[in-house]
Length: 466
Image 1: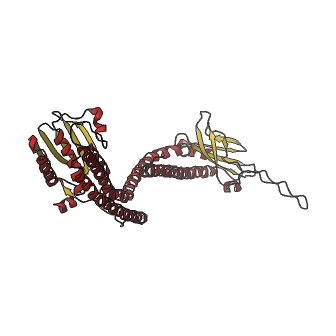
Image 2: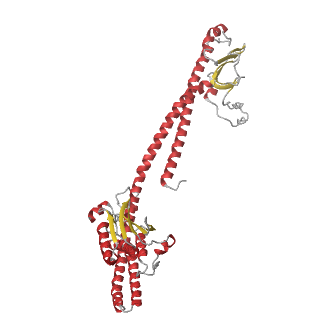
Image 3: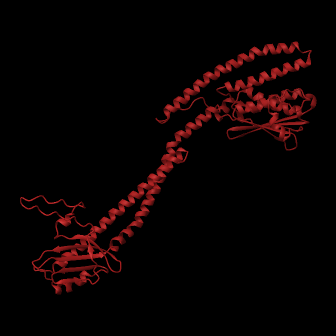
């Protein structure tokens, strides 16, 4: 059984269509055989009636009349007849012995007056109407010496000199030929009907599953921040599910709003004490460095809490945000004469808070500027539902074996600088919390290429952001 609903419905529909066509074909073939057989029986009965006109009241056969009727009696190949009576048998030379298809059960003898009741007859098929009236033609079957099956009708007439049996037979192929001739168009019609039913089932399946696909897309849009709730205008069976999803999203918004408030309160409570401690230890570089490390750790975990607590996402265009970051970082490294460039289209926007964008892009650009020899290039392109933000420098780069460790919190591959080892870690974790990821690779001309995948804003949100 397929695991998908679509596969299961297709399989069930295919089996139902196949079973229906087989039953319909079997029923039509049976009805056609019965129709052809009844027509053949009527022709054989007419032949028996014609033969009966050659028998007089005493059971004698008028052979002269039979001779005159031979052209009519033997007009078709394979048709046979025979008359058996007190004067012997006359008819077709190879007429086969006949048997009734369902021999009648023997009738019990009548009970004598005042005597015991007769023994019941042994079980068997009930007698047919033809058996109850021996002066009417009844069906029979036989097989010639050459193995040809025949379908026959016969009747027994009572005469003063004894019974006279008249039989007429035709090859069984007379029944099979028209059935075979009719089966080809019948099978073609059933095949066409099957294809029509298959197409109708596929169309019906597509229409039935369309609300599920739309509901899935709306849930994905909630996850990416493009909408806050699903549309409850659904089919009757899906309306309770849509209502429960919206209730779940509302509960999540309330819980996340509470968590975000707590994170903001924590940031406000720690900001002043840490800043005061940094001022008090300004003359003690080792301790001041530890305070700066504490501050970076606090900002790192608060950024994570802010993203995890954010139920809805704002929209920001990257071009102006990156331009501001490049200007600020350029001033920090003005003494090194770095060439900083940004290549981002004006319509590229992400579904993120501006502070989250500053955290991700700022850490990547600052890391590139600290290790670059002369140039830092920033580009961003939209692909599908994501935006690829790439920061490239011409520094020494990071060996492949150290790239995973470089994105871990507190890891520093170069101890000569003044960093704390949180820049790449913050960028990676924020990107993952937004459904993206950070990819470190070697730049084309040497150095490091850091690519981060961010959620792309919807077109309507881009218009409102602009």
